[in-house]
Amino acid sequence: MTAELFFQSLIDGILMGGIYGLVAIGLTLIFGVMKIINFAQGALLMLGMYVSYWCFALFGISPYISLPLSAVILFFIGMLIQRGVLQRMSGAPDHNQLLVTLGITLFIENLALVVFKPDFRSINLEGIPNTISILNLNIHTTKLIAFVFTIVLAIALFYFLKKTYIGKAIRATSINSGGAALVGVNIKKINYIAFGIGAALAGIAGALISPFFYTSPTVGSSFILTAFVVVVLGGLGNFLGALVGGVLIGVTESLGGAILPGSLKELVPYVIFILVLMLKPNGLFGGKVR
Image (cartoon, rainbow, N blue to C red; front, top):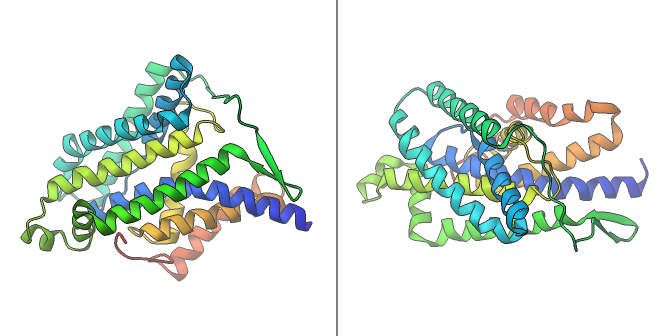
């Protein structure tokens, strides 16, 4: 491998890893607060992509402008899922809750299949160059924008969790929901908000992905497995771990693609997944929402 190919793969991996991290942050937030492994996160990401696509196709609105709309719509969809379905499963065995989220995934994907048809749709943003060149390295512009958005959102979410009352209540609930209830935290309300935020992050990720990835009813499955690997790698329920894990998986996947032939690069994240489970089952940063 030449030095140029190495650095090119490294940059591509970091940019894509940011997206993985953003999807995984929503996933790990939901798990950290409610202990629910949300298989529907990929389907929610798909809905966010469709919101961006139709805003662009019908009104010519850039996904970066319609991004807040995707976040708000997905926030309320997430709250409805939590209030209408998952809250009723509170106290049920973990595998039952997991299967329910899998059922929600199938429902959303099949509903999208009926409404939007199985066509692959894409957004072509005019006025934004595909790549920019720095020191003979090509940087994909829309991926770079997505990465910058991810960093800004991660910092904003970190500030929200650390400094606001609701953020502190979410952290308290993730650590000890019984203790949080004793000091006056409304656990049901916090669960609604936490799931809504997790869904909104999926919607934002979908909006950021839509300029460089096709939109279809099953696109979420392309990201959800990787997001689970990222969450396990970073530590279930750990905010920083999800972001770092996303970048790590993105880089290894990209470097693996440059070194390994054919589709063998797909094996790299899963080899890391198995090694982490064997050597450090709680993940690199295992813990609560931090």
